[in-house]
Length: 180
Image (tube, rainbow, N blue to C red; front, side, top):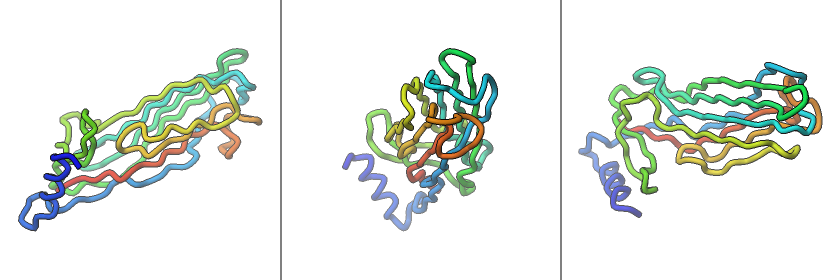
């Protein structure tokens, strides 16, 4: 255990500390969130798609913690089937005295980090071309995401039905702790 993590645990265990309590706003999952059809037909037909995904963890107000998911899929040839997803999910409300959150730093050490001046805590971006009819699972891309799974090209109609045989993203979050 790193020195910072040991200090954070010592501070948390102290009953006289101003930082003696924390709240979890993560440890949630969002299953098969489907994009909307925006162009071409509804079938990628083995031609991609190119998939661009961005997931943001942010404060949308002083105390509201949200997950913002943007995903764009477009067929690589033919009639350019296209799907777009832009969704916002409420994760929790910060206590009024929240000051820090538990995360890894740039060296991979766990510790309490002060809230950034920017509303964005962290972001994950991922690009790939779907070259098969299987979902892609990305494990542990960052401290707050356990994993996410993206389905693009499938064996049937790809866009618009929102079934397991359709384009979607599923996201599993780790515990996101805030200190107050």
